[in-house]
Amino acid sequence: MGIRLDRTGGIGVITIDRPEKLNALTLAMYDELGATFAEVQGDPRIGVAVLTGAGERAFCVGADLGESIPALTEERFDISEWDAAHQKHSTLEKPVVAAINGLCLGGGFEIMLSTDIRLASADAQFALPETGVGVVPAGGTLVRLIRQIPYAFAMDLMLRGDRIDAETALRYGVVNRVVEASALHDEAIAVAEQLLTKSATALATVKRAVRALADLPEPEAFRLEAVLGQQAFASDDAREGLAAFAERRPPRFPSRGA
Image 1 (cartoon, rainbow, N blue to C red):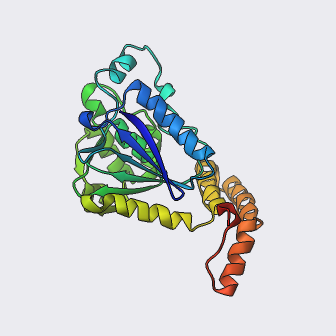
Image 2: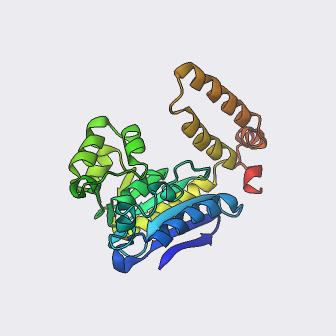
Image 3: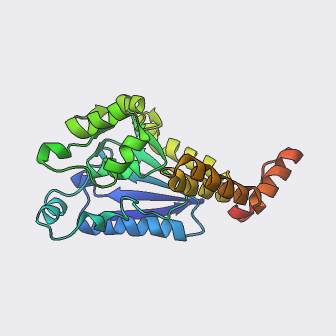
């Protein structure tokens, strides 16, 4: 039980591993997940992460109702202690691919929103049920959801809290793709492997820029975009990428240790 990190060929597979409890997160698991994201960022052997849940029934159903939720409601700790697990204020500049198998509810939904590319099994279900028990999805969702999908869809999910299926999540823009459950792991790994062929410098710049530019006034955002873009164009990866294009060969990006 806990959070598991397995490394294979430049991919770090992060597994929320408590299938007997639908991968509900204990207080310790929240800490472990935040520490694992930091480990991925600091490990030069990992270029891309895949985040999933153990078993077939659930990606993650959020905080453990027997431990984590009572600790919050009794004000024994502040929800900001989960910031690292929810990738608030994150410095992780490597792509994170979510492989969503089964139930993705509450805090599990919120953690999914912190990822970059999302694949869902055809039987996956999604919900933010917090308002039904008198709380709100404050693990990043109140900020992120309205910025990621259209207003009406976001408000429907947050206010009513009803479950939606994978195809509805795809239509809302919550996930990128729906695949058969039996193919989910392989499809997520294939996406991660494709990302490993890209410039690590460019991928990190995209993530850094998206975070930095989202809330700036347009003139300031364009100015900073030019700065970040110029840094990428002046990089060793850019020189190699352009040379490879001219020579009609696959690039060997220095950022990948080539």
